[in-house]
Length: 336
Image (cartoon, rainbow, N blue to C red; front, side, top):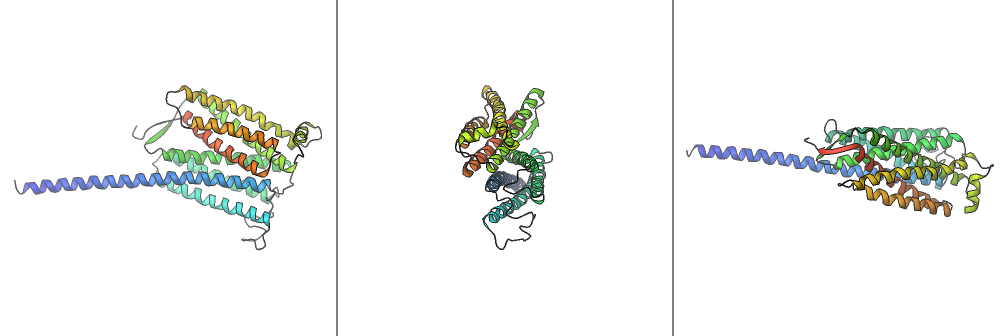
């Protein structure tokens, strides 16, 4: 009996040690996932800042600061005699290049940390593909010389719409990646509901149209600045007004349609017993965005207000995508 007791004690020590090692491994894995989720949210915030700076490039007419060269700036790796417009455009290219690096790190890290079939993997892959497409569209704008401050061509307007639409999809993919990574003990499954899916998809598309129409309106404000508020309204309905300014009226019309979807979405959430955390934030940012849009019209779209308007629009879009995802995907514990 005296000889058996130490053996049993050693087995207990071995078992306790194994449990401690397993707990330590779980703790390390959990810490790594939390760090990955925080990094994903940082990538979202960084890309929002890059997009706002891109709006500043367009609003100040600095898109041609590096000429028609890409990826070089005026044929140089580093501009030796930069002017103000060159510095603005070159800064945008550098920050955009860093965005590619950050998203690539996010993709690799996400692929290593998440399990097979995880939704975050797919959204990270989509984000990487959309970012490369973003760079491709930007390069085409430069190489086809459609970045000049006075470029009024239809091709410029078309590329601008495609570019901004791709930007919204990129933000959506990054935000979903960060949100899914933040759900430590949950996995997600698609909810097969035709009515809800159709309404959500159409609603998100209508909000994307708002953004693309807004990019056209902003381009029109830059190319054809109005001397007064009255003059701006007359421009919209005059027979001699350029087509780009006539399209500006699509922005408030699309905003009304998109607002209907937002109110429908928020109404659904408030009817549920378990309310979504995104619903009140979506409502608040919607009213802030409408107020900023009205002030933007009254003040004749100054550059600082255009950037603020775009920043709030991006935040609103991210919140709306996350709230809409709650309509399409059901969360449940990972073990289920």
